[in-house]
Image 1 (cartoon, rainbow over the protein chains, first blue to last red):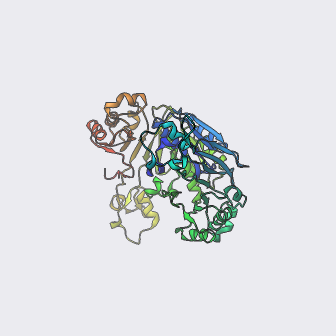
Image 2: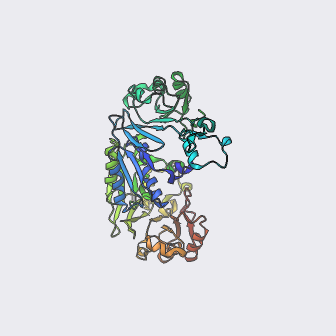
Image 3: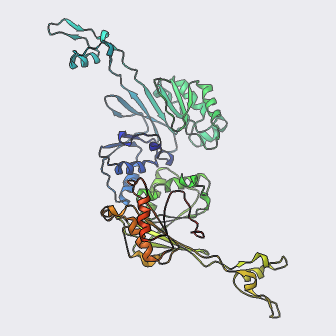
Length: 264
Length: 264
């Protein structure tokens, strides 16, 4: 329902990463799978999650006597050490071990270096596609006789920056995280409680906004989003102020809001 | 989410009846159970449904390492013959066998006869509570010497009518239903398709709006609500017209609308 509300096209989703098996983190999944089925999806869907997620899905498919018209490929996520979960031409995804009441991981998405960009002002229609491909790779282009035809720096611009995003759902305060989060462009870290309720946070394996800010500061990330606020807080200002006191570039995760990494 | 949206208080729900294990009919249940837990519910909750529902719930509780602070009492609903599921001072609930791809039942809720009502205009403050109780039971009240003190008809009004409501979720057209639905005050019957797509209805074990109207007419119910419309219908007029052609007192089940049995 939220994906629809915020106009996220279902068919563009090929991989779903589930941090842990608490209801507020996965109960919408089954409905999404059935919706994808009704929308006639045929492409494989990769699911990354803790042991049990596959069993829960399989059981519900069994009783609904449904066989989906697409394949679900389940990837069991190790939770005791960071693991490579996925890599393709543009992105690498690692798990981030978190500290919670049940096995739980965050996810680190790192864009790979991007190709150089052709400077459109310098291109003429007579240029050959294979020459443009070489220029994008950062190479100079030579004539058959070995003389320089196009010098790369005359025709290309620096690549767009590559960004990284770390998603740390439910977790107790864990300074262990710092080394894996070092320098990420955007960190989402839960902040269920304010400092006033730190005992509650400890007891329930959650973090305070101060603690989230401290992780962001110690890891030297560029931006922090805090979220997963306890329903007891009717206004979120205190949470934002607390995080910002530790780490100024803090933001609130408000449902439906987008954060543009190029502009943050 | 919908219960919240329409201000239905969770704590007033003691029994939940699930027709069958297709996603659109039960996937919200797990979230409701967790919400009830967070709202500190302690009262027993009775769940009526097909075999498998208990297993699905138990598995998800296991992986979330949750034990709820209330007890769930699961009642397995037979689906081959109408069965008495629940009876208390005010209501009787029976299952209604339906015809669908998976085991599926509807539910018939029948109010018991209600007590006579005290006519407030006729009551004076000197009357004793035990005399009022006798009047509500429809009895005359006598003095100790056997002479008539209050004649019932002078002090009471007829009871309010008792109503019945039948909920027939997903089902193929099934004339078998008629005898169990005879004379109910309000029938909800699915109408997934228009007559034009009757072949689709047959194939998927659903009904058309015409068929729903026919069931209502043949069972001599007082009012019909049709629902569970296929997403292909952008406007619902055709469905309502079709049902109304068979049975004039037809209504559309629009989410959030209420039907007052006393006013229908």
